[in-house]
Length: 282
Image (cartoon, rainbow, N blue to C red; front, side):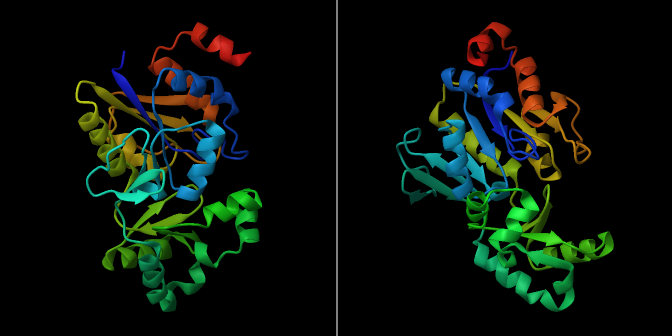
């Protein structure tokens, strides 16, 4: 058995189906976690605007991490006192781990002569193009466009040119993460560092509780959190191979895809009795 779990989960392709963005197979388990006061913490490349909406759909009131670890948002109901170095953001505290989006747009602009034809910057995509590329609705695409920190780019070039592009970003003090659909240009932040910061905050806030982090993800940009979580779960994907991890201990792989795999592995890992979910499945 695991102590007090903190569940850090990727969204697209993990808790949300890669194609439909549905979380229906995981709904009974999410209800169970809510009743048991087990935090399900989104750790995603999505924006704050997207997360505020998605959390309402999930009936989720836990903290959340956006834009691949660029910022952590903390509900004031859970953390009434402002944690060190956090900013006031209405009903939330915001802890920033990245420079703002404008910095990265300027950096990309400086690279245009060399790479302009090889990628399309997120900020240059219309809402209609985002809808076509991602399968999001117009409203969802509008929320996805409200990025505050890094800048995703849609790569059109070959692998060799992509490596040169990444090298150029690195030399200018940036970092590139490979997501499910986009390359994410930003600071050298990652989901793992943000997860560790938030876990430590929980430990400081509840000193008599032994917390165990469980990270679930399906893509390369999940590797940092999967490597350093107390327990890692790699969710099978219908579109790409599983990210390769160095760790061997406390590592699980789902057989099912997306939210079905999410449900399957967490029930097994946390030894949740079937009876506990039966009522929620009716």
